[in-house]
Figure 1 (cartoon, helix red, strand yellow):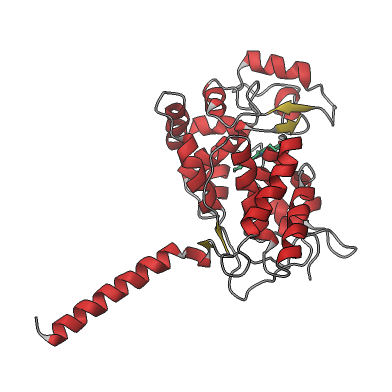
Figure 2 (cartoon, helix red, strand yellow):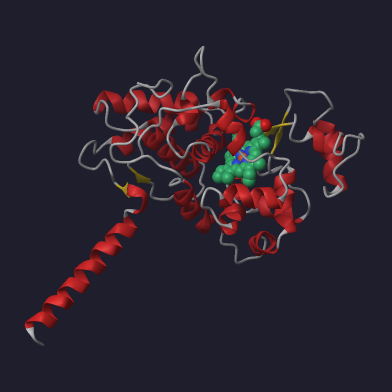
Length: 327
Ligand code: HEM
C-alpha cells in the first residue's frame, strides 16, 4: 500500500469513528454526563426517590407522567416545574397538568444535589432520572438515562394545552402528536403502556365517555359494555374528585396487563382504545398479550427516545437554582 493510500484509509476510519461517536452523543446527551462534575448526583437522586417511593409507591406513576408532560411541552427542559407568576400562567396550571403529582420529590432531590454540587445538575435531568428510578423501584423496567439537559426559561399554560395529547384523541390525532415530537407509531404503542400503572380522575376523561359521548347522554360504543357498567359504579356524573385505576386490579404493577385490557376494549380513555384502530398499534397490542411479549424490554429505549425531545444542551438555557423558579 502506498503512503497516500494508507493516509486515506486512516482518514476514512477516523471519519467513521467520529460519526459513531456523534451518533452516541445524539442531541448532546450522554450517559454519565455528571461523572466528572458531580459523580454522586445519580446516587443522591436515587436515594431521595427511594425515600419517597418506599413510603408512597403511588407516586411512581405520577413521576413517570411528569417526565412525559415535561418532554411534550417545550422539550424535556424542566419547564413543567416552573411556578406561575402574576404575569404568566405556567404549564403547571394548564388543565391537563393540575392532576400532576410528585413535585416534592423533584424539589427534595434538587435540594440534596445542590448541597453536594451547587449549580451543576439540571432540573430537567432530575425529572428524567427520578422517572426511571421510580419505575424501577416498583419493579418495573430500568434503563440508562442519557443526561446533560439544561433547564428552559419559558413555561406557558397555552403551550401545554397545545402540545399535550388529549384523552379524547383518536388514532390520527395521537399519531400526529407523537410524530410531531419525532416519535414513531411503535413508540406511541409502547409509551401508552405507561398506563399500566397509576390512576385517573373520573372527570372529565372517563365521565364524558360514559355519560355524554356525543352530547346526547350516550356511552362510547367502542367500550366493552361490562367495563362501562363497572366504571359507572365508580364514576358518577358530576363527580369531580373520584379517582379510578388505569389498569384495574393491576395498577400498581408494571406489567403487560394494560395491553390485555386494551385488547378487550377496556382501555380507560378513548386514546387507549384508539390503539386498536390502526394496524401497527393494534398488532403491537395483540403481540403483548401472548407469551412472547416485548413491552418490558421496549419501554426503556422508548423512554430514552422520549427523553431526547427538544433538549437544551451546551450553553443553551440554564441550570436552575430552584426548580420552580427561573434564575
Ligand atoms: C398517548 C397519549 C396520552 C394521553 C392522552 C394520556 C392521558 C392521561 C390522562 C388523562 C391521565 C389521567 C390524569 C388524571 O386524571 O389524574 C393519565 C395518567 C397517566 N399517564 Fe398518560 N396519557 C398519554 C400518554 C402517556 C405516556 C406516554 C405516559 C408515560 C410514558 C403516560 C403515563 C401516565 C401515568 C403513569 C398516569 C397515571 C398518573 C398518576 O397515577 O398520577 N401517559 N394520562
